[in-house]
Length: 452
View 1: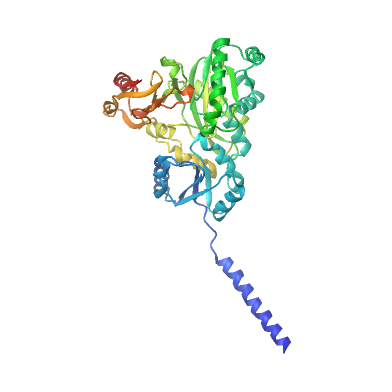
View 2: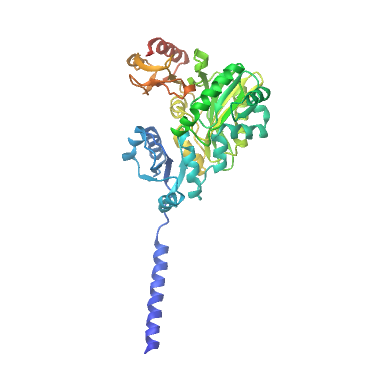
């Protein structure tokens, strides 16, 4: 009797085993089609992906991962009803991150971040999604922190980076060490801050001591407000004189680099501000092919020095009498570049940032469609905004494309070097360079910004 029961049990268990095996074999493997953005997401990114889907007849899903301890900005909030996946948790806990991402491990196609201040969170997520292409955690740190970047560049090729040193305190000996290692004029740069925050140029000792006091006083606050990456450290480097440019590059998983066209940058310093924000950025440039190739060569060396791969790199350079020098390298898409490259060349910069991470060749049309400029307007003095006129007339210019107003009457207007942001940003495009330059001039004559 017991023998028959055992046979029946064995038979039933066998049937169940074969059923489970058959069911698992019949299950379709999950499709990797989620593009997961980190921290921030903007409407134009969704539009760019949808445009690619329509063109290539591919189905992609868009997701956002954000730290539940941080409040989303208004632009990201406005996109949430347009995306397929919203993930959040306490990003200070590896266990919570693992639990949040685990159900989607086999569906995530690419992990990327548009915003410079989200690079630390991107770095935190990378180990939790191990089977997709991406930059290493260390390469992100080397690129995001100015001191680490300079150290790597110096070892790789000292000719592409200026002399520099690290500031540790306000002692007279430290000031003397700075003078011996770097010399005047020099730049003071907090290592992990973006958008020229707390960046100053110094021409003599008294100025250096005053600037260092201000930076040491403000740097902790800037980091606490979420503007910083890494530890609060201060870099001092030789001031480079020349013309400033930037170039965005797509770096494949095996290190092959595809370059976008260069952008010429005019800083606030060049129009009379004692500040280094990017006042005017324009593409195409007037550089000849030989100079463009030299800029690409130096940018390629910098990317290799930082061991970047499977990412877009935003490289800022200075064209000096001694040759091309690296200002900095960001492991991300450059600011305004998605619009500038789209208007002037028809490049889908947002989608190329994804393609390079999934081992697909980026699409970089060469034909020039026209000239694009991105401009940032700051108040000429610091204080509370009391008057802003000319905005309506600016939108009537033939070259006008986009406007982003960042301040309202009563808001505090600080210089970038003191941690402030622009009053407004504007994007303009024209098929003819001369017509664009004319509209830039009209804009400058129209805008009035006053503070009290």
